Length: 134
Image (tube, rainbow, N blue to C red; front, side):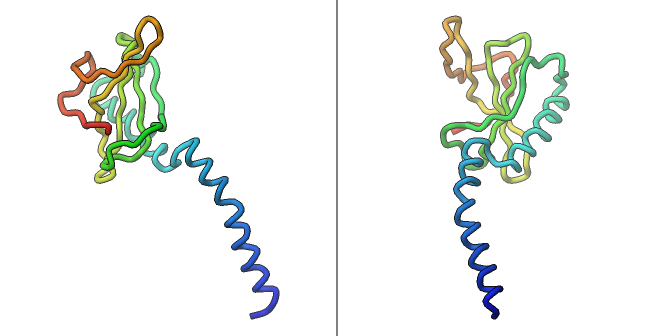
């Protein structure tokens, strides 16, 4: 091997080592781009198939959970708030096997004083078969 080839290999290795922390920080702050893509693609389609229109939904977007989750699901979730139940936040996940959308049983409710509480009982948009988030 020539000296030029050795320097190129060494430079590539150093570049990889130096840029890896930036990639890790990006993933920790923003989540996996692939997970975000499949959530943004599959969950709105699932909600449409369930009969929900865009006019029924106040807010919906991809979220990256701060804690550990059910290992059968991709890490990123999709958060949905319906207009006529705007104090309850629903979460949907994508299964690793089959990429199916499932609603999580855990929901959050924001009280009048701004405190977020977990809800595990039935609510207006609760699905009969839900999955455990944790």
